[in-house]
Image 1 (cartoon, rainbow, N blue to C red):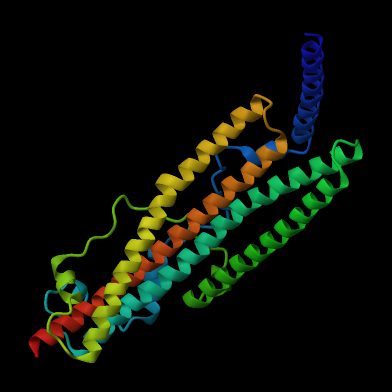
Image 2: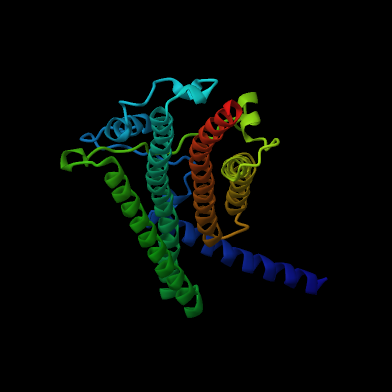
Length: 322
């Protein structure tokens, strides 16, 4: 019985010591601003007052006005049933229109995604910096050993390099966008949307006309076989990317949020320390970055699919009139 009492007393002493460390950790994190990285609601991206939001539609219209063969482009020709009635120049102008839309959309979405990812990477860096400063302070008072300190410093150095690499990609995406839209100096203050468009509820379905245009049928022309095959591949790639982005939005991101909620409860119950919480904040932001990548891939593929479908439908119409 005495052994049991002594064991229980020892446990209580250790628990009290652990709680005092937990309280001290909590205080230190508050002092260095670490809790801001664990906020569930991300602050909305603000555009400086001297900038205007430059939408994708504006970007597309700018490029069409600069590059499209407006003399030969027939407005509304993309919705025609029989493309063979178009002259060769009109067909070329229609294909050119969709190529411009695709390339502009790709450049625009890449810039938006890099900007959005950079914002979340800042949260990751803030979490690692908070953990690093906390470790440094705890090392000075003897609460952690030197190995823990060195590992935390190494992690911080690596995260700073990751942030700089992502920052460089953002600058590169911005320069590509400037080149594509042929901006002049007075245009450089124009800002793009702060976030990518939300994932649509359902995937794009092919119309009967589009479905017929990509079916192989009895054609043997090598060019037509290739066009239809590439368009079928394009549609399958679109569906795969849609399902991936949907899984991130409906399964992976919500699951990570639940994990974070559980970790917060465990922290409040003094079952885990602040390092686990800051590590979780890093995982939250990384999961969101992965979702942004999946959504970006879908948006670019969706724009490419529209271009490929036009090519297939025009070829289908030309084959049937021969």
